[in-house]
Length: 122
Image (cartoon, rainbow, N blue to C red; front, side, top):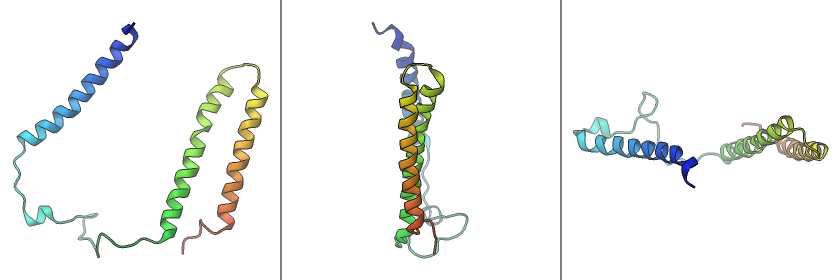
């Protein structure tokens, strides 16, 4: 019953033990010698300017969220393309119409965000 899963479970166990083992060994073998220079914040080879708790513009978060939304939405095209181009079953017309409706909704959302000025960086 578990025959097909034995290889996968063994690989999972080896990966987990390797990860845990490396972390444990690094904590056991390392010699910590903290200095003020090592404990100071470091960013791109230069001392940081200002505080690390500065507020970002809402535009930054808006662009980031839009990227995530549109990126995740386009990932839904991969399983659809696999099914659409991989199999020749009945109902492919419906599958094509569903994806065109999906892309239409995605395009309308993109145009809406574009017209609202979300892609303009001030």
